[in-house]
Amino acid sequence: MNSIDIANGIIFQKLGISKDSFDDRLICQKKIYLLQSLGTNLGYAYNWYVRGPYSPALTSYLYGNLDVLASNDFSDCKLADTAEKNVHCVNCLKERKRADLTTASWYELLASLLYIHNNRESWKINDQEQPLFLTLMKYKPQYNEEQCQYAFEILSDEGFIKTEL
Image (cartoon, rainbow, N blue to C red; front, side, top):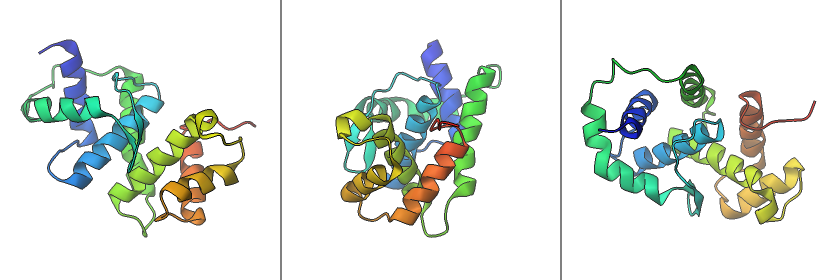
């Protein structure tokens, strides 16, 4: 097992990553996207897919390695303090979930909104919140503007989106 596998194993365990159900795999994709956006780069490239940001390489890695990584004892290993803080931040997003969303739909909303925000140029939208929300709702009509506004505020509060003061 190399150092990348060990780092992934620790992070996957701390994030509660599972591949058991579709929702588990969706949450995994979104949590890793959010984690990487904070600067803890695990090397997974993302593109837009039906359910938001998606990394085919992460899916392949999970199917090939998660069982081994999940059963390993990494207690002798330690993450950098920044990575530890970022994992905690991603996990704490669940506590701020709205009651009208499932955990999977909450992480999908957060990651999708952040992905579009981070790629505004390619989506051809300006820096205003309204076009961001309208773009997200166009591709994900299951979400409404109030949910988008709340998710945007959470992403801003938690440091995923840098806002001008």
